[in-house]
Image (cartoon, rainbow, N blue to C red; front, side, top):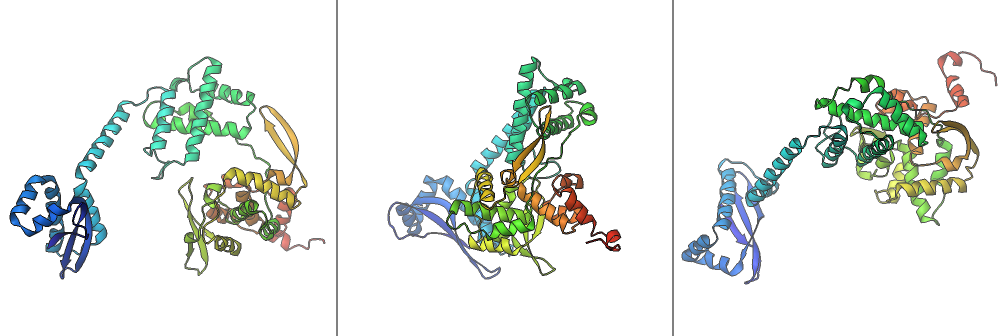
Length: 439
């Protein structure tokens, strides 16, 4: 039997009503809030006098309709011999008490969805705005999944939208679905090249354009045949540095207790180098992610923010030590602070040797000379683990299992061995180990 009580000592004012249910079969003994409040004096009078109860019910029918519904719901569980838990009781009570609000919210959401359907874009520029809006609201998910599009990805989409808007203003033309031809592709790339963007930035803009076009094609707003066959995404391998195992250890052991800001960056950066994840992922690694698998070893189980993929990263003792140092949670540091301080830390460690890089800005290609420390940034961590695994003889599939790359081609852009290192690695292959390599 469900009974209603007030759990307060006051005699005046208002108080929450609680419902108590006790049953031996099924075994139920719970007391939870109904989320409804009453005048204490009126309630106490109604509990002592039948006439007062009838008067109370007549004066506040909405309250009692909800209390009666709660009572009937709970008693039905008892009659069916279902052992209801506090969590289930709270959930069902919430649906009864806030039924009007839930119905109104459902109606509002349905009306909003209908309005969005009626506002279906009919031109390319409007569709880009619609596409971004749907990503922001969660209506549009990542391809082939149920995960929301990452904020960083949405920011990239907005960047493309801004570049296309500037392109149209510069060229004095409006681009619609029928204008997405090979001529547009070539001219848009030329426009970005004239702005002295790097080849990889241009490639990223083209890739986003293709993504949006494919989405429009699914809605039968355009035929993306030209886009599919002619809009080549041309990435250029970038000469980026990585930290060797020796330098990672040197960084790990570097005492920066007198520089707290540097020390936090150093520790987060080391975790990044030993886990090989994107900065958005390695910054949030914590002790709760540590699991033991059937091989008896411990791993970091991490769901990647960008892809939604789950990876298992072998737990390095240095990562565990750093997590323990901060009681299981890495210190909060901004990406820009990592980029700034890790260069300064690298300089302090003497990592100042000159590195030659082949760079391109717009149509101009040139060889740049920079100090090693000045090339360190958040993404160096991901390259470091992938390259060090390759040096140790790991297969590409094994590296991909840790980094979460979707293809070997994509992974290869992260492997930064120089020619001498590649040759030394080749010397370990079976063919060469059968020969006697001269010392």
